[in-house]
Image 1 (cartoon, rainbow, N blue to C red):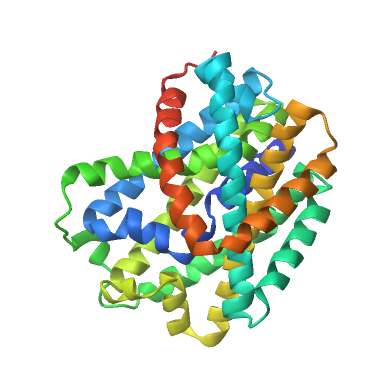
Image 2 (cartoon, rainbow, N blue to C red):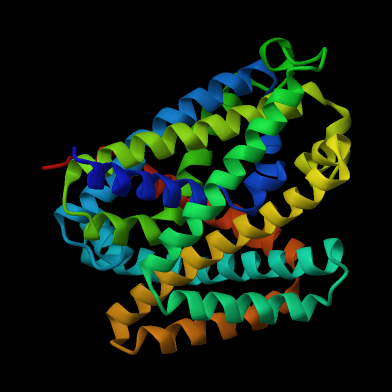
Length: 345
């Protein structure tokens, strides 16, 4: 590969990481619930998840490239057939709309709880910035993730090196829990399925617009390893503070606060940025999907989607999160199995 190809691979990796590393990941709640609570077994679950992210992320984008998919509906039709693929896509459209509303509500919550600014101001400001950025299309998503992901990686290294000073650093290798083995074995599949099925809204157009399979391959490898690295660092840090860290609604925030007030302020900004990158990716994927069906202007669709998200976000972050995520997780597993079985040409 030439220098330009490597840059494109790194951009794909940054988008991949930025899309997966959403609000739940950045706060530490996802890592705690899916991995850290399982002790040393959670460590092996993260390693398995990393391989799944590399393999299936690559497969989703290559499939999109091969069938020249214009949106994730084209991919679902290739997986499920015309009838069921269209139904699954409609369902995913509704849930992605809900997840976008969750992200927007999360942004409003950061404004209110951490910056002492009105919740509604947070919603409106986030919608406006999102709208103007998405007028640039995929270019905006690449640009935002190219900034946010390196900052997140720097913060991850700060947490990692601070954790090395703790006498409980090795907890991730020796902590035991009473959870049955089947729950640990299923965790990598559930976690990867849930996150990848959401990420396909942006991975599919990326794959379709990338000319060389080798660029996708290395983008998936670098992105998958990056996701695994951040998962593992979060897991090591949380394990070193178990079980007391479970009392925090934002566990990684609790760790950041213990380092210094300045790092905590930066961390809250990172959480907002991660919420924002996920919102950008989901709204972009939704706009492409609706455009494919209606042929309306992309800008008009983005505006409409953001207005609906604004209205839904009035319900609140916690209620939306607890209602939509379990429902979508169940459907995601079936999608995951079909992606895994699908053969590439």
